[in-house]
Image (cartoon, rainbow over all chains, first blue to last red; front, side, top):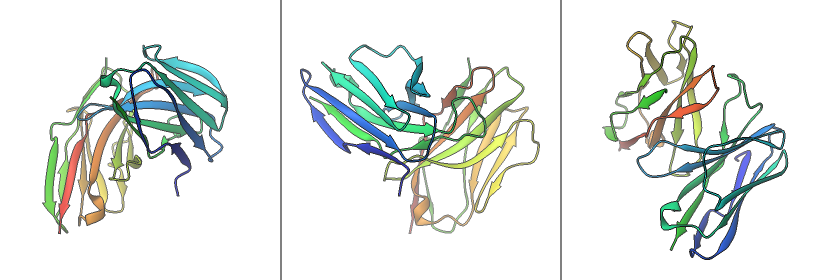
Amino acid sequence: ETGVTQTPRHLVMGMTNKKSLKCEQHLGHNAMYWYKQSAKKPLELMFVYSLEERVENNSVPSRFSPECPNSSHLFLHLHTLQPEDSALYLCASSQDRISTNSPLHFGNGTRLTVT
Amino acid sequence: AQTVTQSQPEMSVQEAETVTLSCTYDTSENNYYLFWYKQPPSRQMILVIRQEAYKQQNATENRFSVNFQKAAKSFSLKISDSQLGDTAMYFCAYLGISNYQLIWGAGTKLIIKP
């Protein structure tokens, strides 16, 4: 059983819709991440939260809006997306943000399709 | 900027065979960490093995071992006695201690055939 849970598993949305992806970690970790995974491309880091504070935003378009209400929960709010935003969105957590002894623990991802 | 290259988009071997996945990276740092992650069809990325650049000894985890060649900037993963459950995408990743950002390769799809 994964310590990082993502919902929904699949999501199909139109370009004018507003939806949210949810991530919950049960590991007591202090850092949480959103990654975008597209076919045949390296994982792209989108956002990083450490102790509920956003510490990294890698030039992500404003149509993606993260929210971290507490150290166990992370959301990605989506609005007016484009078809090229279709991808697998992975959530991950780690004990600390900056630690070489703190491997990432991933969820199963949300497969997003924008029509 | 650091980069990670996985030159094999897809590989397939018979069950019980040994397979080696290649990974090369580019960096000007002397101290860093390298990882292999596995992503099975369930989509959950799992850490397979980890290597610290200042350690000359190659890391080993059961059937998984690495061949770390620091001068050549090469970090290959060897899977011995491959099993059907090894079928997955495998990602090589680099972590430098200057900015602690994980740099990923594009992945290799490994298929183990019965």
